[in-house]
Structures are given as structure tokens and as C-alpha cells.
Figure 1 (cartoon, rainbow, N blue to C red):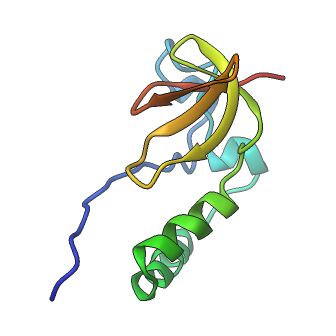
Figure 2 (figure 1 turned 30 degrees about the vertical axis):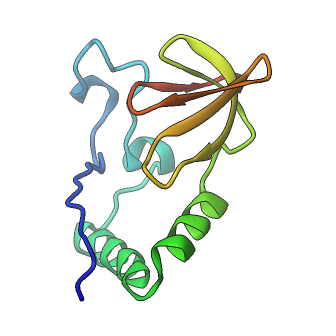
Figure 3 (figure 1 turned 45 degrees about the vertical axis):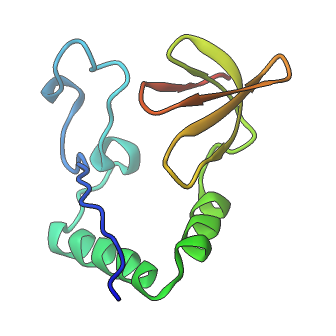
Length: 117
């Protein structure tokens, strides 16, 4: 029996500077260079990403989701998603973000997440 699969893509801005970003995202976009102040070895980053994700291949879906939520930055934080403010409580197994606002749970499948400070 085979497990289902998901094909997902993501982008890591490695060496971009502020003026490299389009004007509409320049205030919120960042890169590893901007965050660390140093250049990063691209093959090393690629290797680290592959090693990280390969660990998940040996886990059950439930264990993978539990570890993902445990390691996720921002759980319990005050956030705004699509104009709705509340507390980010979890990411559901189907990928929806769960926001609690006014004692009610609201779920989001997409949209920008802004951390309130």
C-alpha cells in the first residue's frame, strides 16, 4: 500500500537586498542575507533542507503533524489573518490555520499572516 503524496513548493530569498523586491512587498519581504548580514552557501542550504524534510518520510502522518505544530513559530501569538485578529492556536492536519477570536474558532486556508507586536 502506498501513501498519498503532496507536491509543494516554496521559495527562500537567499541573497536579495531590500531594493531587489517589488515595491508592493519591499516593506515586509526579507532574505537570509538581510536577516543574518552574511552570505549563505546555496548548496549547503539545499542539503540542509533535504535532510530536514527526509526525516518526515519515516514518520506517520499523525506524528509528522504533531512535530510540525510543536516546532511551529507563532502558536499562541496574537496575529491578523485576512483582516481578522485573534490568537493563532494551531495548524490543522489539512493545512488550515486556526485563529481564536472572541471565543470563536475561525479557519483560514490562505492569506497573509501578520504578527501583532
